[in-house]
Amino acid sequence: MARAALRADESQHGDNGFELTEGEKKALLVQGLAEIEKHIEEKDRVVALIRTSRKRLVSHGFKPKVIDFALRLRKDEDDTMIEQRRAEIEVARFLNHPIGTQPELPLVMEDRTPGVDKAFAEGEIAGASGKTCSAPYATASANEQSWIRGWHEGQATITSAFKKLEAKAAAEAEAGADEIDDEDEDVA
Image (cartoon, rainbow, N blue to C red; front, side, top):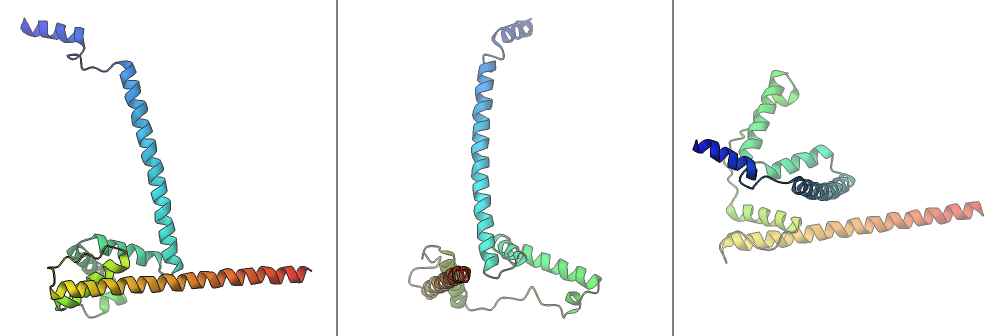
């Protein structure tokens, strides 16, 4: 009896007053669609930026496969990449491919690189990547000092590379302008 009264009460108030009206549903749909469209526009802009960055790397001489591999290396865990390489070598061996016939590399080999050298390499990558100079090592430690030297080296290297690219672009632009001038003289 109580259940019947409760059901009758719910049917009058439509799910305890929480049922959306047609106007509310319409407003939520329109608002949600606008939000999705905004995100699609942002995605399209970001995809265009990614394509531009990739094209720039390709123009610097990096093959797309190398770019993809480098991105995976930066993203994946070392164990995942080592497992992938082992699987590829095993398949190559099964297919008698030259990669599979090479002496097996000890991929589980312990890294014996001194800590200061690792810190320097990490700092160099951070500097070239444009990250802030903030070493992840204890203050005033040898590793921190090495990381900072590496960061400065990375900054110097990327600056040098950009200067060379700017000079190359300027030279190409000048050569293009000279070519246009030569064509104008030939026409006259």
